[in-house]
Length: 134
Image (cartoon, rainbow, N blue to C red):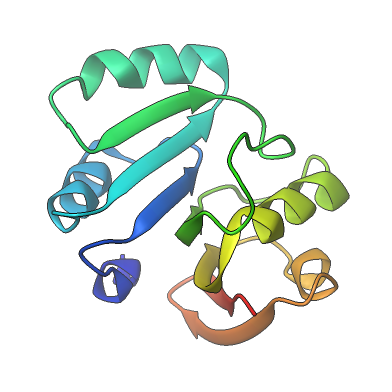
């Protein structure tokens, strides 16, 4: 995934859904001063916690992307692995809220709900649209 070239050593990364084992391990290794939070449904989170117990800079949280329990502007990079919206208004609002002012959001979903909240499409990479925070 080309998002790897965009990662800074101190990024605070949010994955919307659980990434593949290879991707998660690769991103974790690129963050000597940063960390990863991956959110998903409860069963997926329980399984991931067991699989990735040795990764010290990764945490998993069972929640919906429409209810991200972090402060405003906390994440510098969001990688949205989902293909479609379940709750476009709620999920896009939460992603825009927790994305830092100069943050990047990689998504495969329709970007219209995110653009309506002021995020700007910066580029297309592979099958992702990359949006920037303001």
